[in-house]
Amino acid sequence: MLAVMVKRPFLCAPFFFALCCCFPNSVCAASATANNVTENVSAMAPPADMRGALREVLGAMQKAQEYADEANRHCVQAGMSAKNAREHEEGAKNALRKLGSEATRMSRALQQAEEAVKLADAAVAECKAAEEAAQAAGIMTLDAVGEVLKHVKDEKAKKQCVPDPLTRAAEQTVLSLEKAKEAEAETEKAAAAAQKTREAAEKAAAARTLAQDVAATAIALLRQREKEEERRRARDREEAEAAKKAAVAEVMNKFAAKKGNDAAPGRNSTATRIQRTRPRVDGGGIPLLLRAPLLMLAAVASVFGFLLC
Image 1: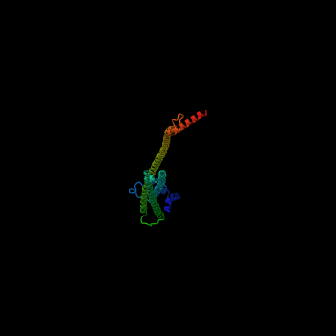
Image 2: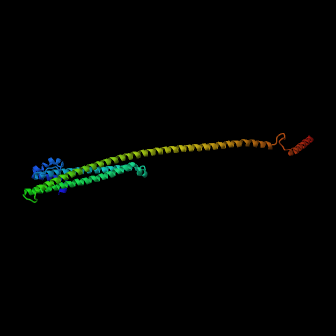
């Protein structure tokens, strides 16, 4: 039952109410002295009576419960911080995946995020251990309350189950105060662990921001390089097209020039050949072998014509 009350603090209210009804002066005064029960356990004077022992042990129990609750809150915050750290790590991975697996593997920012997640998980484990220790200390204080209540009951019933019930009650009081002190120390450990997880989450967030900045810068540079490469290819295509056109024009010019040079001598040689083969009117163009028979034929024709006349 005591363990259940530690894990469910709302059950302590009826318990305290019942104790206040039975021992109004002792139990209700415990809440007023609960803040001072763990100051100096070794220097504490033994309780003068059972009521004083009950008051001290109830104050220690209440303080231990408060420490356990505080440790639980620290662990809840630590868990949230660790979750944030993992989300930041995943965000860094998503940002770097755009650059390829090699960039993801070599990224210093991602390594920092992974280290931060490991630190956060370790801090959460520390916090849970501290919380469990604080709860265990709280259970011990509840056990001490039970022992003191038993002695109080025996005292009221005029039973002597132990030789010196007040001494045993004082021992339980000291034990409860020690356990409350342990719960306080464990709560401080839980708070330190929660602080570690917050710092780890901040480191993971910084790593995520760095990874996103690196990815954005790299993507911008890649896009700029692609644009420059496209412009270079366009210039190369234009230059190649211009060179092709120039080469074609040069070939055409050379061909036209060669054709013109070939056409002019051809006309002159043809005219020369025609002039050489065409008979001239004065007979200068007729070969000598043909000229004599023609002259003789012309002379005979002339004589024949004269005779006819």
